[in-house]
Amino acid sequence: MTTTDQHKLWILSLGFKNNTSADFKAWIMYNNPDTYSSTKQLSIRYSDLNVLKDTHNYTSLKGTIDAPWFKFLHKLRNNTYTTTQLNHDTNNNNDDSNIDWKLKYTQLLKETNTYKHKYLSLKNMNKALNNTITTQRNTIKHYTEHKNKTEQEIKLITHNFKEIQTSLTNKINTYEDYINKCYQTMLDFEKQYDILKLENDSFKQNFSNISSSQLSSQTISTLQQKYEKLSFPQYPTIICPITQEIMVEPVIAFDGQSYEKTAIEQWFQSNNKSPSNGTELSSRILIANHSLRKLIAEIATST
Image 1 (spheres, rainbow, N blue to C red):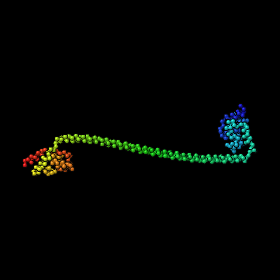
Image 2: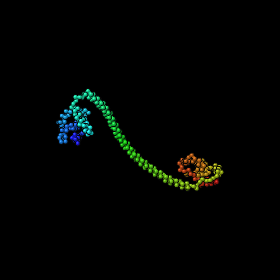
Image 3: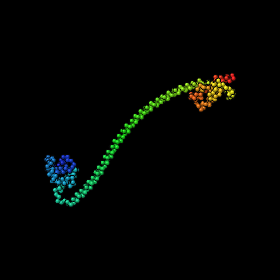
């Protein structure tokens, strides 16, 4: 391995960062192996660095492609920066008598316009990006506010729903209690109804053998003609309260009064009250008054 290669490896082993200042320092140390090496001076002193920068116009050339140290470390790592190129860059830096300054100015102006155009494009892009970021931030803010508002509304709705649910549950419980009471009352009514039905059936059964006399129409007509000629004011009980005539076929109604059967049946077709006292009758059942009919027959026979 040559001395130049050893020096190159030593420069790379120093671990310079990839920036303009590091390129400049590495370039200085690489071109001055008699001053800087692993066995001599290991770094550039701060006081020497400022002098070197002034000597090589570091301030005006830094970051430009005209600087001989432009991307020096990159070229050194990739073996694209030979000793000849280094010497050429150094000579060009020290000898500028053959430079076409007009052409260089034109190139610099062109590069400036290019950089200006790129700068404006980048500025517009940054502006658009900032506008986009602002819009996105506003959107996120609006979404967050809307989300918070929605969450609050959901909480309120949930709270109201729980209150309504609780109220409905209480009402349902109340209604269920009421329905249960109604149902129990209905059961009691049904029991009472069954009792009354049994009593009514028993009542009807007791009167099943009691009926009006089975007089023929001819017999009734004959008796009516016979009784029309009679007058018994001393026997008011044999007079029908409705027809005011002697009864032929007397029956007892539920008001305890005896009536002519045909007269009281016709009365019940339009009225449920007693013809005698006007009270409401509990039933329209008529019971044949055999005793009264026998008495009327005896009175009529004795005259």
